[in-house]
Structure formats: structure tokens, C-alpha cells
Length: 252
Image (cartoon, rainbow, N blue to C red; front, side, top):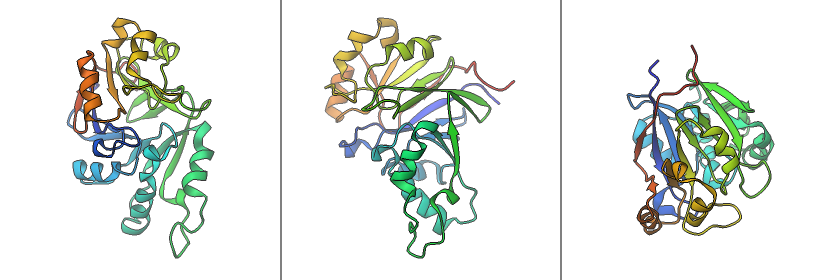
């Protein structure tokens, strides 16, 4: 398997930035084939189908806010009704948020009017702790600082990339998981709040060398993205593809 991967954004907006699409990205192999979808908000599944022409077969969930998991219900209906013979996709979920995800999407025994199908029958739930294997690569998983203790997680691939998910600045995390030149895809808008990073937070918490490796997403609007770029930062937009360095964490 080739080492070099790429990350394609399907959306880059925060929960209210409908025109930007819900923040989500797909880890692709060098040929552009999808390996792993990151989050699945309401706008994500149509964008994924438009790009790849098939349903996702593997998804990593960073946290359970609906702009990151609301599309899983639509995916369930498609899997249960349109493609009942399709193998259930793997759903990699940090173990601390499995119960929260179940309560949000899977508790109702009548997801279908006729009943008879449990939500989890159409997914292969893969609870993950500090790391997990997928497509021959070993991914690190870490808690971030979003809204409440250990309710949101990022992940990364050593020497390749870090994806923070929604978070306040996490310098202590990135000191560990972005220490080898990784590209860091980071939540950031213009204005900070208790759950999200603002642009002024970046210089306050991160050294210049790290800031030069940031790619910002989950911002408020196209105008906000333009301001972020005017401040010297790269931004991700729907359709953008980022080439990644070769991973150091893969199967022999």
C-alpha cells in the first residue's frame, strides 16, 4: 500500500454556516479513493455521494453534535431500506461518547415505521480508545477541549496529519501529536467562544512553526475565511484537497 494519502474537504462551515456545508473531510488514497470519512453532518452524505457515487464504508466520529452526526440517520435509512444487503460500514467512535451517540440516534426502537430493524444492525460499531487500525494505518485518538470534559475527540496519523475536530486551543495535545511536522487541520473562526477557537487564540497559544502548519476550518462564512487568509492562515473549503506527508504509523 502506498504511504502517501490526501485529505479532501466536503464542507468547512460551523453549525450555522449552511452555504459552506457541515465540516467534514475524507481521507483518500493517492488515487483519490475514499478510505475514511470524518464526521457525517446533515449536508455530508449528499456531498459524499456526489463525489464518490457510493455510500461511505468507514466513518470516524469526533463528537455527537448534530452538525457532525445528523447525517448518520439518513445513512441508516439508506442502508436499511435501499441497500439492505450492503455490508454495514465501520463506525469508529471514541468509547467515551458511544452512549451519547446511542441516546442521540439509536434509542428509538421505531427508526422505521414498521419497526424490526435496530439502528446498530446497519453499522459495525468500532469503539476506539487511544488508537485504532484502519486501512493498514494506526491512528492516534485524543481528547480535545470542546464544551464539556471528554465529549469531543480529534485524531491523527504520526508524521502525516492531525485533525482536531471542534475545539478550543490544545497546545499540550499538539505538542504530543503534532511534533513531527504533521499538517494540522484545526477548528477556528474569527471569534472565540467557550467551545471553539478564535483567530486571536492561535498566536496566543501556538508557536509560529506550528501556526505555519495549520489549515483552518469550521468558520462562520466565506467572508470569515477571507479574513483568516488575510491574517496569513490557510483555510479549507469544500472540494479542497490537501496532499499529506508519508505516514510513519502503518502496518509493516
